[in-house]
Length: 205
Image (cartoon, rainbow, N blue to C red; front, top):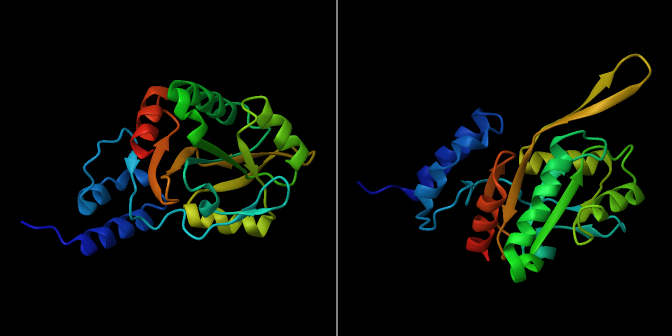
């Protein structure tokens, strides 16, 4: 029986919306799109994710996926005071770059802070330099951040700590991989290994 590609894509999008961003449901899109390459990460080709977003970089220049064509862009939402997931993920991405060897320069990590209130451009730049100076930070206004998060169907929220006004940030943990044409192709969970990610990036190059 032949699959109707348009119907399958619509079904995948409806499942994504019903799941509230549970991207584990998206492998159906791979079958609908006829994708032949085997990926370790979830194939989200054709899904309505990561489209139309734009955010300022640390110098205030507006950036979008089109600015990173020719490279595999890896988008990650996090914040500087994150105690575990964020630094672990960024360290893993430095390992991925090393595993790619000469192709490492064709991977562009984009760290989007979900805590622009505390994460100034200077703080974000110093933080990312501790992992790899080539990693780029994106920091928008609360309104710009909300729009970008909506595009990626990702979650973040301020979580108060005690009564002194302190807080932490709750946020989705995962990586969005764009191909060299600026199209979102894969979603990788935080438990993906460096070897698996390096393999997927090679397949996208």
